[in-house]
Amino acid sequence: MTLVGISHASDFTCNNTLLKTPITPFKEIHELNFTNWADYMSPKLIPCFNKLSNTNIRLSYTTDDNMTRAKVMTGASGFDVIEQGALYLPSEIKSGALVKLDKSKLPNWQYRNKAIYDKISQINDPGNQYAIVYTYGTTGIAYNEDKLKEVFGHKVVPNSWQYLFNPKYLKQLKKCGVSLLDEPEQVFGNYFHYAGIDPNTTSKADYERAALYLIKNVRPYIKYFDSNKYQNDFTAGNLCVVMGYSGDMVRAVERAKEIFPDTHLYYVLPKEGTNIWFDMLMIPKGATNLDAAYKFLNFNMEPYIAAMNSNYLYQPNAVIDNKQYLNQLMQDPNVTPTDEMIKKMYVLTIHSPKLQAFISKMWMYVKYGIEFTPQYAK
Image (cartoon, rainbow, N blue to C red; front, side, top):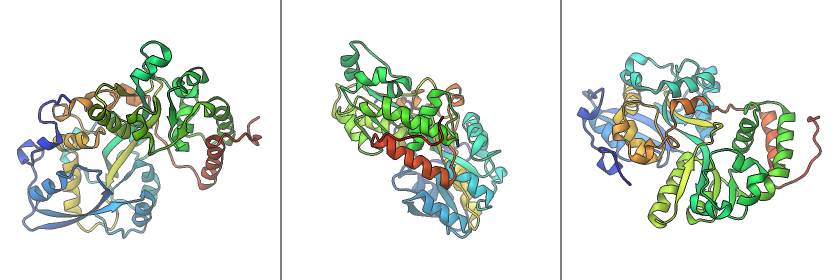
């Protein structure tokens, strides 16, 4: 991989001179309780923050966002900072479970990517008052250029949802293997977006019509629905086109370069737009060390730090002025979308338990190809 500047994770330098806002260390050591997913942060960042700020971060690993949310909603989670999907923000904000950010304590707020924060403000956190963006990603299409050339007889870039939702293309792609995520929100959401329907529709009729379409026109040509093994199968050449999460697919593409250097794998964003999702950092009510919490949030908004973390996660960040630190891969607009591309994307919301149960039933019909008689679609 060709790298730009000092972008590689192994080249990380823990030095205040690289920071837009140099950290003033606490006179006495501070304790900070933080929860995040395992291996979801460059292992060099926390030791660097500890060293520069005279803090001891106690890291607890998240295994379920819903469990973290349950703790946060009590107002006594035991954490000073949490990492969590933006999907949970509306309910936590409504219940008063989060600390409203004092942006005077976040001098790096000026380096936020406004296009990203505007997107979050539309649905998840109006006015961006309660959380900062840790990282984000998209749902897109990964493809094997060589296998598609064999199928179509010429080079094809499947940069449209029609390659996954139109049987005209699926009938041909079935020969080399197609997979979709085993996630009803993603498959229904992106189908709705492709078909010109609100991805956050609450209409049961919309879901019935979508399920019947997918059962008839998509399900017969799909090798499987999966959200885990598809990465390895794609790298190994067992799939030629897949719907996948950007971080997963970029890692698969990079892994293939090392294992199968003659294979040409790529990740592309559909031209119609797609789902964009965000992972956030926030301060829960009951946090006992607000000073350290704000220092840590501001540290994560540092252009240099955010770039180093992106290079490690293979996921973009919501900070500007840091391209010089990003590796070449992260500068691909399919991986780090442009502001114009972001405007065409949509954000998912959480449905009511009753509607979610109905969607799950529709998904089972789609997943197992079960025909049914609609109750709501006329």
